[in-house]
Length: 264
Image 1 (cartoon, rainbow, N blue to C red):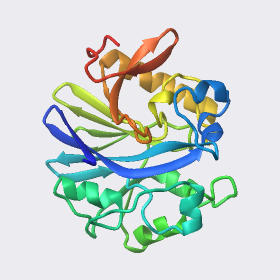
Image 2: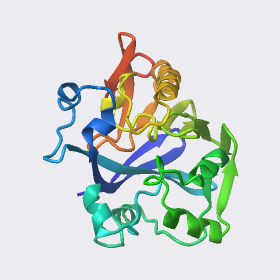
Image 3: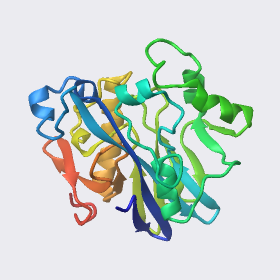
């Protein structure tokens, strides 16, 4: 089974990488949306958890490979893996993400630069009870020790055709990644719209720290995506990695890639 889906965006070659699965509580994943509604879209297990993908995006850029997100890794305990239903062990490397990278001819190596919003790194350092399970020190300390952070402030052109766009709400400095080449656009949504089931505007995670801010971030980004026919990359959908968005009344729904651009 392939772990990679490759697509062209103008002159860019991009790959979605299947980094494994996890399971989180369905109620938490859909916030105020009643269970009879959300379970029609994603079926929960006996512990009320729904399956979620761990999808990353690799961009082959003239300046070098750019990896958007790095999955969960393999540092956590058996208890952690059980609670969060993590299944990401690799067959060729330590994790499934290593296997997916190998499938397209890349291997992890020391020396990567990690690009994050300055405000997000500062926020992670607060270590308060509400966010403790999301910002784990073993994932941050090695990057700081190796002096490999690149901190940005707000909307930033990382490289030609790769734009970091603030989409706050899930956390105060959440960012999505916008790719543009030869008149075509794609967006790695991250946790703004984690699955295709979260495309309707009010379907917002209970995990989001500022859900009303998420609402406005979604309204703005999805409005542009629908009008301009963007390709969307869904980080956590367990099945669908790529698609578009179509208007549905005052909200939005999923549309397959063959939907004409800008027409929903």
